[in-house]
Length: 79
Image (cartoon, rainbow, N blue to C red; front, side):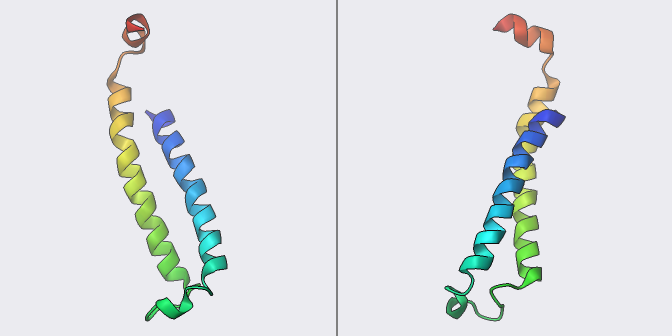
């Protein structure tokens, strides 16, 4: 279960890191579209990143729980 959850969250963490970098670079281009928040606002970026991480953890947890319930020997024999 730990392996499945770790693989899913590792990909999401890389995506969030790349997205934060891109958001900071592209922030000046969309600054006129943002109301009440600056393009580099650390609180807004952290809230969005944590929200995405929580949604990804919930999405990765369901398959990881299912995989954790399967007997490895039975799964290998079925193949």
